[in-house]
Image 1 (cartoon, chains in turn purple, yellow):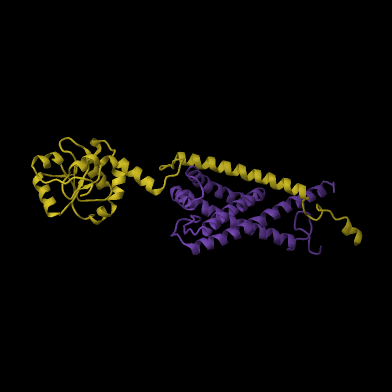
Image 2 (cartoon, each protein chain N blue to C red; image 1 turned 45 degrees about the vertical axis):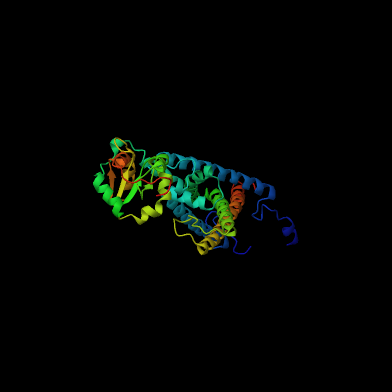
Length: 172
Length: 196
């Protein structure tokens, strides 16, 4: 466990340890994910009708659910982004991003498999294009990986923090 | 060294035991579900106060256009902007020379019984449907004069259709106020059936 100390909290080493660098990576990925989701959410909230048309293009949902999704998804994306920015809310935010990325990935993959050419409405509107759909599918995979990484690190952080607190309280 | 390794537990290695991990993920998924519900409520509230709220059930662009067209011709007559009018002589001349697009705003049943030769049926009571059917003809005649007529006398159908066309961007629209009544009373030729 050489170099495995943590900076600050235990009065241990303050040099850059693997724990610290991992923490910075988690924060960097969280900020990047938050930026993507807040931007995407704000973009969709500006024109819900256009977004509803994009959702309808996937031909997956019945008419009764399309507008509900068009109204609910943008605030959800913005909330995910904001939750990712807070250290105590990051865990739920990253899980939400992971879940929604799987949903996006599945919808896009299904559209590609069915031979549809559409504008997914993920980041504003554009001309329907299959190459762009493939690109957005890859982006969803990247977003999922990033969110999963942040989530797993946050869960691990729960144990680490609990252990430290117990050690401080003289329990461990 | 051997004894140290043997006493390492999942917790001391910085990992949650499988059961706690599962419970934690379930708790977090519950948080995600709550977040989704709160977002939906927020979206519905914002929509309620939006200047152009979405209906609960989705309408395709075609359905929305139909609603828009139907609304255009459902305006009460007092709201209609005055459109230019033409008399029988001018109308007759336009029909003969084919210099204008002639539109019959009466219901299709009356159009089939008799109409001005060369006229298309753009019925006020089925405006959205007929407008879509005539989209090509109307597009081709966008810069041409358009003359609309209905039964004649006090009929409002021609005014409503002319007003709708003006709202849709057709600039050269006028009304033959004498309508079918004046045309047939003058003993001028007529066509029957659904075609021109």
